[in-house]
Length: 135
Image (cartoon, rainbow, N blue to C red; front, side, top):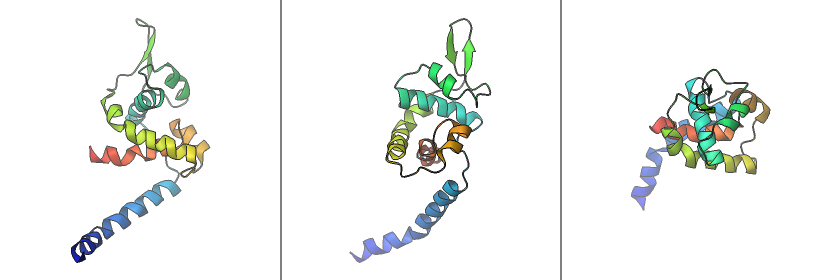
């Protein structure tokens, strides 16, 4: 019993640092998906959110942010992305957790801001973030 208590204390500084980092990210209202990360987030939204690989509705949702992450292909008549979708498959469970947290409202921090800057509210990108750092 004594050893388990000591091991927990060894991780206390790490737990405190992670908690402070999470609070700082939330309070700073900084979009987490931007640049090429937005392209991977678009795939994640399609695969985990819609359950498909059709990017047509993501092209509409993220139109105000799209800087070439999703492009119209004249030959196929479909929206495409030049970015691979593999990471979206790995991040899907974290996206689903973010979706659940958004519906519950626990991480409802300035949703309009995050929708304007990354297309979805904060939890959708906050929960996949630790998984991204582990890759």
